[in-house]
Image (cartoon, rainbow, N blue to C red; front, side, top):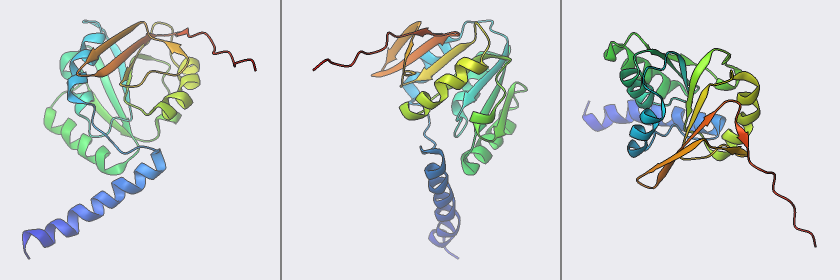
Length: 185
């Protein structure tokens, strides 16, 4: 059997599974733009301890970077798509970092009551749907870091831009943006 045949039997079904779960989740598992990793890591204060969540952790590279930079955080990536989840589990095993874990599942059902940091790279639609859940679930003082997209209706406490990609940081409870008024005719 040649390499192309092996590739066809392995890669094509994996891509089909990833594509099918992209339809379920509403977005394909996309790695964070590499230029945003530094600002994300910098937005988490040195010495922060406790539980950090990456919602929609995809292939696991950002959770790995957070676990390396912030050893006082127990980093838990949550991913619903099975192929990226399995890849990230292998990444965690190979990293040998005791503070890095991945969980298979839907982050909408996740208990976040003890989170100190929440990081996400979600589409604007997913962020809009998650905003009320985050407000109800996260403890006062929890840091929320959103990669590339702002949380609708929330005013960021800081915004860093690197390579054209913004990183928004919020502290719970978030400051709200004023509601837009409809134009009078």
